[in-house]
Image 1 (tube, rainbow, N blue to C red):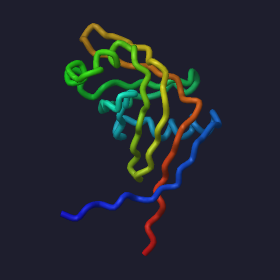
Image 2: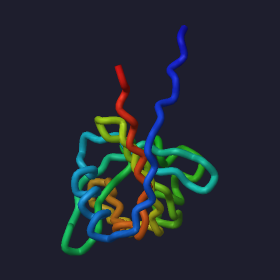
Image 3: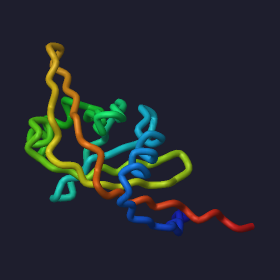
Amino acid sequence: MPQRRPSLAHTELLNDATEIASILKAAIQPGHEAQARDGQGRLWPLKLMGCDWQAGIFFWRPRDLEQTRLQPGGMHLLTGNLAVELLISLPDDTRLQFQTNRPIVLSFSDDSVSMVSEFPAQLRRDTPYSATA
């Protein structure tokens, strides 16, 4: 089976709050693939739920709540005791990566949760180079 070659990407470390907010506005969409990664390298698939642009916060949750509860470190994530790195993949293969502080956890009567995090101060964006013919 042929192996897929890693694509080359242009990497930027962004610090401008307005630029970061603009990028997140386009990126935080329910259909985009996202994961949370803790300091031990554990990954949890996420669902991005939306943003409050005026408050500078966004909402997310684990895709599979039960599976997250069963995984090592999952309860720390679900109780807001874990700062994580968020990884978002966009349809054009651009990848975003940023750190979040411990999220605020909103628990609902139906046993679901939502996490609330502030926009990051820094954001890494890896944009793939266009393939040349």
